[in-house]
Amino acid sequence: MCGIAGYVGSRDAAPLIVDCLKRLEYRGYDSCGIAVVDSHGMFVRKSVGSLDAFREAIEAASPAGSVGIGHTRWATHGKVDQRNAHPHLSCDGSIAIVHNGVINNADRLRVQLTREGHTFASDTDSEVIAHLLEQGVKDGASFERAFLALPEQLLGTYAVLAMSRDSEVVLAMRKGSPLVVGIGDGEYFPASDIPSFLPNTSRVVYLGENEGFVLSRNGMERLDLEGDRVVHRADLPASQFVNLSPESISKGGFEHFMIKEILDQASGLERLIQGAPDLIGDVVPVLRDARDIIFVGAGTSYHACLFGEYLFASVVRRHVDAIVSSDFEHHAELLDSHSVVVALSQSGETLDTLEAVRMAQDRGARTIAVTNGELSSMARLAQHVIPLFAGPELAVAATKSYTAQLAILALFGEGLANQRPSAVGRPLWQAHDALFNLTSEAARHHTREVARELLGAPAVFLTGRGRHYVTALEAALKLKEVAGLRAEALHGGEMKHGTLALIEDGTPAIHFFDEQESPRTEVAASELKSRGARIISVGPRPLASSDQHIRVDDAGIATPIVQVIPMQILAYELAKLKSMDPDRPRNLAKSVTVP
Ligand code: GLU
Image 1 (cartoon, rainbow, N blue to C red):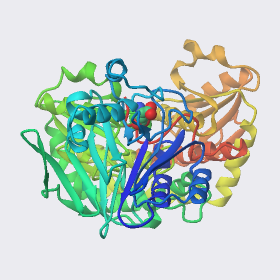
Image 2 (cartoon, protein in one colour):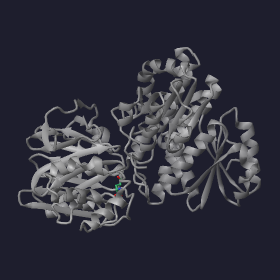
Image 3 (cartoon, rainbow, N blue to C red):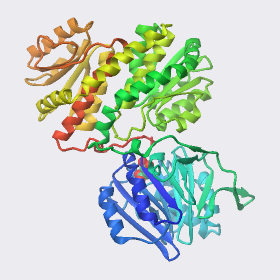
Image 4 (spheres, rainbow, N blue to C red):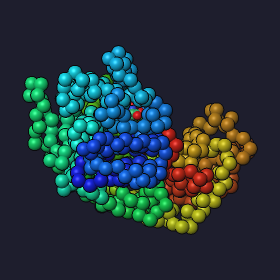
């Protein structure tokens, strides 16, 4: 969360940084701001609202300077207003910082700095960083020396860019939060994530934790201490070229990233079916030899973990635990070198999941990261990495990364169940073919009609049993986050244990099922219909009580992959009918890098 981006080079920094921030908008869009420095001083501008409006203001001001830093915020401390927008400044305005993360000891530092005479202009935790640097300089340190003192002073997580009015350089450091530097031809692009600078360069350096770096027109160097003296070292982490085209991070003619990504799923699945089995071959023995297996993830990735739990029980006949990342610490004590933890995260930067991988490794467990962020912190930390083959996912709501996670887990399951290779691929190819029908213009039109019927409904209930309950959970999450609809997933077998009390006349109830589950679903739907519910069925054939039906044929082990597609489209279409931006759900952001 929060996107930070900077520029050091010889072009005009301000418009470049705004463009870089625009490509990080999925990380936060509460407010934005930039600071640019040249030999005459520092220009700072912040704004609440869209980066498009901000860009116009910046173009009008056309600040000089080819060194700068910028930020697009997802607030953790302090409400969404201009005061709390980054960059934050020192009292005398000579130092500017942008920050992604949470400073746990900010309150104590604020008291201490206030006692030392500092005045705070915002309610953020981040602002302490600017004052700590100012105090360091006041106490006689150089700007760089004061910057290198931050790890001793700050508790928590941070990716920080800092700039001083007195020098045209950007200082960079990270701990816990992601920070990379794009290396161009005589120019540098520090940023939270690669898409930020991709049209400018695909050469990237990943910064190690708590190492300070200085970016200037003369180059990028690592800051080191010899005694109390700061020295510049040329030994940088190795750079890599990333294989992402600028088109893969653009909307490519689509109205929103979300629909582009929904429609991307067929080609992603094709790449996965062709590329993943070889990689999975390496981890199947690791899973087979494990005494216990834990799947860990947050949000949509947690739903994928639950799918894995059902799948391993029914296909592999192995018990696995699916655990929400933020709860992992309660289970960590049970792990040892006979355990395997499979961590699922789209970005590979989700803080709680990353923490779970660390805890697992501390206990000697083997770790497998299943992630779209092949070069992410998690991918670099885990012992095995299985990519999702999905390509960049920039809409806040996860779509193609979810179905790719399910496909990878299906391949794990079938690998462990010792199926013949043909049996592994067949249901996935079946799902792949079904994706074309489910995303056709006719199917979308039909789903739009279902969405129209949901307009005005105060709430919707979604039910299913077993793995269909997982689809209900994920579909409910999409409707909540994208379309702002109160959507509650209820286990199909639990209806009579209390939840039927919620059903009123006209309450929409969406049922997920396959052939095998259809008799029980018939009964459950009829019981709901008798109490006034409006029945929407999602399965191979309509139920006797269906008011509306979305046809999704069985695809064996891959059925949950296809079942969720119309629900992603439903959430998207409903958001549009409600004039909401499907790519920018209220209060949310992608890549949850804060606790
Ligand atoms: N804690 C900072 C703020 O609230 C940064 C938040 C973040 O990185 O998401 O402004």
